[in-house]
Amino acid sequence: MLTELLPFIFFFIALFYSSVGFGGGSSYLAILSLVLTDFYEIRSIALILNICVVSIGTIVFIRNNVLKPKLIWPFFIFSIPMAYLGAQVKLSQSVFFLILGSALILSGIFMVLRFVKTKLESHEFTNSKKFLLGGSIGLLSGISGIGGGIFLSPVLNLLKWKDPRIIASLASVFILVNSIAGLIGLNVAGTFRLDYGLVGKLILAVILGGGLGSYLSSKKFNLRILGYLTAGLVFYVGLRLILLHSFNIRI
Image 1 (cartoon, rainbow, N blue to C red):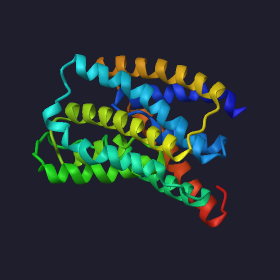
Image 2 (cartoon, rainbow, N blue to C red; image 1 turned 45 degrees about the vertical axis):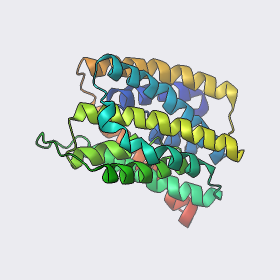
Image 3 (cartoon, rainbow, N blue to C red; image 1 turned 30 degrees about the vertical axis):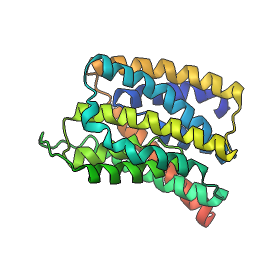
Image 4 (cartoon, rainbow, N blue to C red; image 1 turned 60 degrees about the vertical axis):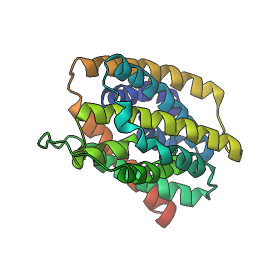
């Protein structure tokens, strides 16, 4: 039954995430982990859906002249190769779900932190700091199947790097390039797996949701409540995965 509802669920996930510059990988992984058992398939589907959603957001940022290539390029120098290498790491099912559960818990916390209001300040980063942030988050994105923007964006907001719109545009491109690098890594490692019938429906759902979310974002539509609900879901599933696969406890 849940499988039949996935396109509708993913539509709303894409709607919210695209409105804040994300792809939705953390929530796709969270939901898919409740339905599918093949963790390679879970990663493959999440990365493809990420690409679909953030491609729309990236186009919107480019058209609105928000994207600043001179500011953001250092974040990609190490993130792309690290995402590629991370995707090739072959893990046991228990270890993968432990890493995924931890990543989802962090995602839920970071999603809530994103709504914390702070003074609008701007601090420049050295290129070495950008290299470090990009590379470390890129590695995590490759291993887990999360594009990484959901980690990078709140960290940069909390560290008060540049305008939130510039950060959102960076997150969108960051997810796009790391998801592509991750998919290439999965192909090279021979772990790219898809149910093409299912993924076709999900792609259509997230494209529609992502397009609507980008439109609502441009209209300053407030999706805060949906954001909190999504954060709660992601946190719960992450905790459930850790307890189930590490301690055999069901909640």
